[in-house]
Length: 308
Image (tube, rainbow, N blue to C red; front, side):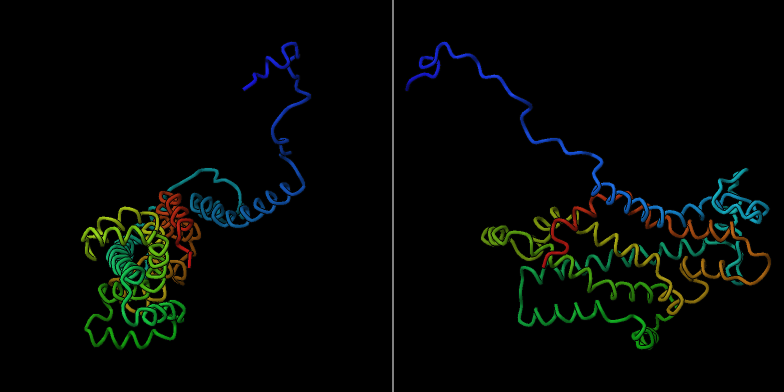
C-alpha cells in the first residue's frame, strides 16, 4: 500500500478553519427560560406552605399574633416542638404525639414487611410460574387496586369483629397489608417481567426450584423495586387517617389521628405554633425515608416498575 507521505511529500499540514465538534448550546434560550421559570414557580408554590409551617413552629405565640407569617423568627424557640411531642392534649390524654408515634411505628413495620413479602412472591409467581387461572387472578388484584376504600369500610369492620381483632393494632396491620397487595403485586410482576427469561430457564436447567431462584437470583437484583414498594407503603400507611380512626380505638390511635385531635381541639387558646410543629413532626418519617432512598426509587421506576 502506498504511503500518503510518499504521494505528497511536500504537502503542507492541513490547517483548521475553525473549532470542531458540535456547536455549544446557549444556556439562556427562550425555551430554557420558560422551562426553568415554570419549575421555579411550582417549586415556590409547593415549598411556601412548608416554609410557613417551619418558621411558625419556631415562634412564640406573641410573635405569631403580630401577623408576620413569612418572616424568620426574631427569637427562635423549640418550645412548641417539645409541647407538640410530649405535652399537647389529644382528647383526654395530654402526652403529645409521642404515644401516637410509637403506635404508628408498631403499625408501620409489620404492615410494610408483610405486604412487600407477599406481593414480591406473588409478582414473582405471576411472572415466571404461570398456573391455570393466573391471568384472572392478576386481573382481580388489579381491580382491587382501584376499588374506593370507602365502600369497603363497613364490610371490613364486620370481618375484623368476627375475627376478634377490631379496634386493635393487629387488625389495622391486616387491613394495610391487604390494601397494599394489589399495587405492590403489580409493581413486582412488571419488574420481574423485565428480567430476561433466559436467566430463569438457565436456573431451571441447573435444577433450581421456586424458592432457590427467588432468593438467590431474583432478590439480589431487585433492590430498586423493593425500595419503590417500601416508599409507597411507608407513605400510604404513615399518612393514613381514615383506616386509623375507623379500625382502632383511642388507646392505640396512630399519629395522624392524634394530630387531627391536636389541630382541631376547641379547648383553650389556639396555639398555631404547636399545631405547625406537630404537623412537621408527623411528616418527618416519610420525608426522611424518601430523601435517603430517593435515587433507588428513581432507579426502580426506570428499571421496569411501570413496564407492562
